[in-house]
Image 1 (tube, rainbow, N blue to C red):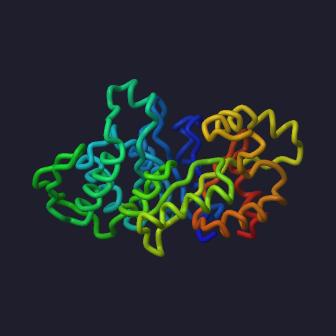
Image 2 (image 1 turned 30 degrees about the vertical axis):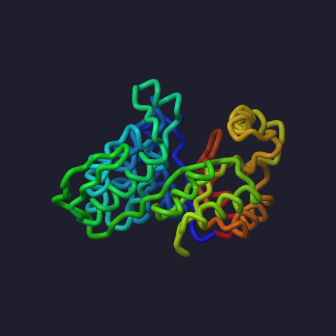
Length: 288
């Protein structure tokens, strides 16, 4: 695995983010990821806080819902972060959870078109181009950033279904695979990404639930509910949810399997108390 990242879980208090980001940088991780789920915290603000608290690690947005983010405004926000922190920003976009998008009146019919047009527009603006795009969902007429970034951040797509994976391979710099997918499903997903035309350096990013414990009962107490929710969403049995939950000694084999399936980045999502301790124990087990 070429990069190891850690997610700042949405349920942790936002004021914990600066210290957590510093601890993760000191632990030696490559990337810190923040999320944008309805009702929790905004991803751009979270990324700005994490970047300001650190000096080396990349900060990824995983992921901003395209229906909530006008491409011009998103490009302006990402450009600001990328100019102040060059080479340390990763922009993530996805379809958004349909129920949440309906809650705020942002659901769009042409979801695939919206995501693809958004990524194309954002990248063009970040590249310093004057963008005119009259698509099915995105309409931009002659917009150009005054302060485009010198180092253009990669744009990755958080997607699940076949056509969306192909879309990511066609227009994004990387693909985020959600928590719970095992090696077989990962390899199949990457086949769709490649079918879309992904370049050899397309980043394949796996999010994975993490909880270090030698006690199955304790691990079930801390992670069982979320594992069952994720299993229901994926349509699999909870026992089939791929994760790094259990003794740290078991993790290297799992990470190797994900790497062999084609993953290039692993993002750990620590669950339960002492997330910093869990991450450091995992890094030690992985020889990082």
